[in-house]
Image (cartoon, rainbow, N blue to C red; front, side, top):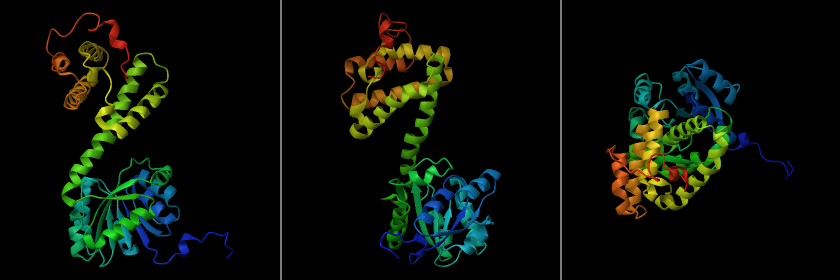
Amino acid sequence: MSTSQQPDPRDRPARLTVGVVGAGRVGPALAASLQLAGHRPVAVSGVSDTSRKRAAEMLPDVPLVPPAEVLERAELVLLTVPDDTLPALVEGLAETGSVRPGQLLVHTSGRYGAKVLDPALRAGALPLALHPAMTFTGTPVDVQRLAGCSFGVTAPEELRLAAEALVIEMGGEPEWIAEERRPLYHAALALGANHLVTLVAQSMELLREAGVAAPDRMLGPLLGAALDNALRSGDAALTGPVARGDAGTVAAHVAELRRHAPQTVAGYLAMARATADRALAHGLLKPELAEDLLGVLAGEPGGPTGPDGPGGTNGAEGDAR
């Protein structure tokens, strides 16, 4: 072989056969990533037509079989099912004798650590919790997004190196999460990523209502800068009428939302209160301005009026500051 030729990943030693139980958005992407690292997907299970189609697209020529047969064929099994179904799945696989001693059993739930795999551990399996901190589309782009993606890793100490090695092979960055911290870790990710989608979708709807033709183009640079600032500076990046203590502007917002999009009011108030608390705690919101602002957020009558109040001229000025 010439020096210019790259070795085929399949020629590497100690490659594992890989199976996927649950062909949702995550499992096929991880299996495809492991395939790029030289491992060999050999079986996948899926229930819905959508999951079966996804498996066929992401893992062509890999047979679709029942879960028990996936475990029979594979040395490394990815359990990529919804959180609420994971415990029963593990218990069922262990009780039916599907788990083999020495088999690597990996789940991708953010909520659970390795203990949820205890029934399989008692059957001789090697339990790993590898949660990619990434949102998945169910398309090949997910494999590319794994490059540099952090994984929440939880496993018995003796399997830590194996768990971290698998993450690195998928292009990810391992981040060790203690068993008892998994629910908090998962709540933090959901708070940031899942709620972000809701906030952005609501913002785009309101901009359309306001007459903006391309809300995505308007929000893209603004939200990108806000995210970058927040990641760099934390609470010091807080801007806008709440952090400034502009109670009149906030009152105008609430009035408009009640008129045009009442379903968004509760979320706006909740986020504004949280923002006010953080701005106060970090010295960004002046205490003398906080009383009127908190009164507006509490729905107290007789809020600020005048040029800075509801319908005033300053309510539309520099809301993104």
